[in-house]
Length: 154
Image 1 (tube, rainbow, N blue to C red):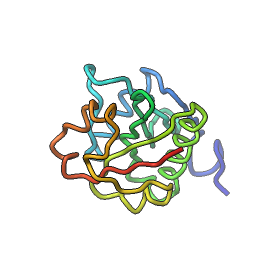
Image 2 (cartoon, rainbow, N blue to C red; image 1 turned 90 degrees about the vertical axis):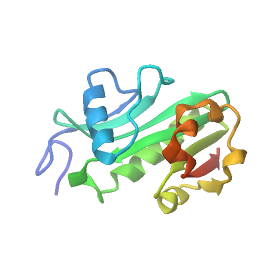
Image 3 (cartoon, rainbow, N blue to C red; image 1 turned 180 degrees about the horizontal axis):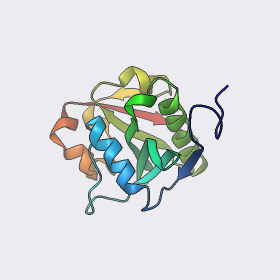
Image 4 (tube, rainbow, N blue to C red; image 1 turned 120 degrees about the horizontal axis):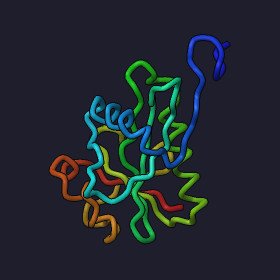
């Protein structure tokens, strides 16, 4: 049996609000997944990451906008996909936002509607996106204009 610190995989560490030392690993993971990498001028992104050994193997982030949050950048390293890490990340972020009493969570996706629907997210029309979330850089990205906006009320 593979457990953290035993067997095939190196020790695991889950971090909420990852620090600057994880940023290069997060950026590599996002770039490899074809996802936007947060820029210095972007609103702050809080990342939940899974670190194995010294490698970031999964990450998910959110941005806070008034009474709404925007989940962005859910990514799992190629060799680790299919192990449920993405699901654990999304569950953890939703739980964290619920604990912070955020009433609604938004995201935009090009191809993962079914995945996020498993967590209670519903497809919404672009013009229904919360006004505060419309101020996010993702709302104005060309690729996101073609994406499906989804919302979950907490």
